[in-house]
Amino acid sequence: MSFRTEPPYIHGSTPKTAVVLVNLGTPDAPTTSAVRRYLKQFLSDPRVVEIPRAIWWFILHLIILPFRSGQSARKYASIWSNEGSPLKVHTEKQAKLLNGYLGERGHKVKVVYAMRYGQPALPDVLRQLKADGCERILFLPAYPQYSGTTTASIFDAVFSHYTQERNVPELRFIKHYHDHDAYIRALRKSVLAHWDMVGRPDKLVMSFHGVPKRTLTLGDPYHCECHKTARLLAKELELTPDQYMVTFQSRFGKAEWLQPYTAPTLQKLAKEGMGRVDVICPGFTSDCLETLEEIAMEARHDFMSAGGKDFNYIGCLNEDDAWIKAMAEITELHLIGWPTIVPPSLREEQEQQAHISREEARRLGADQ
Image (tube, rainbow, N blue to C red; front, side, top):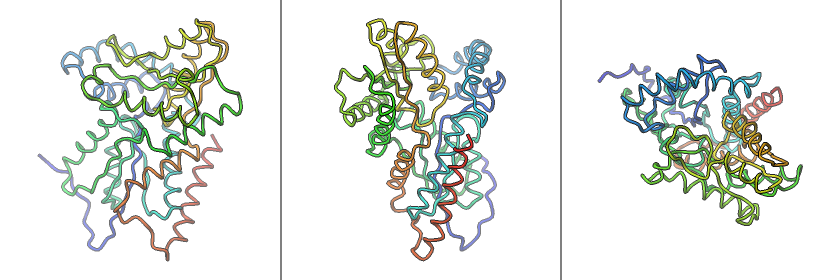
């Protein structure tokens, strides 16, 4: 095994601490070629598709990539903003705001973001952190609910990267925060703010990203964590069991996935005479293709075409203050024991820098 060349070691240098917010990823552009590159990387991950590699290679390269890339590119084009991919835009802003909040709380840390697939690539970000002298790194997945298909893939990528490093930094991983009080409160605030504007629906549908059903039977806790998030949010909203339900979206392939499926469920509700539904996607912390196109556009069409009267999509937490504060709480919990607190003598300068960082992030949001 060969190891990468390490940057020169500087005796007496102060080790730095970094927090890496890791999201799934996105194509570089809403074009067939860019989407093809992205899908190839994403769907080549054995964590994502548990099919024998030889069989899957032919399916992926001869069927999925040639035919699905163009279709997906058109969907991405429908939600692309002037700033770029919504998922990337929101994740970048979240990292900047989190950096500011942690700075205001007295922590001297460097907050950056990375993508598991696409850019900025996680290995590139880790190499830059090493060059910057970061010897303690905390990884914060953008997925509140743990799944082997998502969170574990981040862990794999990190461990794989450091198999080629001589000087491995101290690493910590946040596995999940599906039941963290601050996360649930942020969701509650988001829903209530929406209801304050438009009133309450006949039913609140909580749609989570789907995974194959076999992952549940093989021990993946994702299904249970989704339902716990839903129960806790419903409790905070004082909803009765008949006022909300959990569904799963983004089914792929012919195998059975976690049920009930979102689109058929919405059609069924409409046909049964339900006039209005609101849909929220608690498993996504940034709006993306799966929320803006699949739910806000396609699911709305499914519901309305089946006879529904009113459909509302409640957006992701994105840069909501309650969510950024929740991220800070979750991060602080996992920073315990690391020397990140700034001495009182330097606190004023740190707070000023943190304020500037937050203001820059907010200006980015205002310019969107």
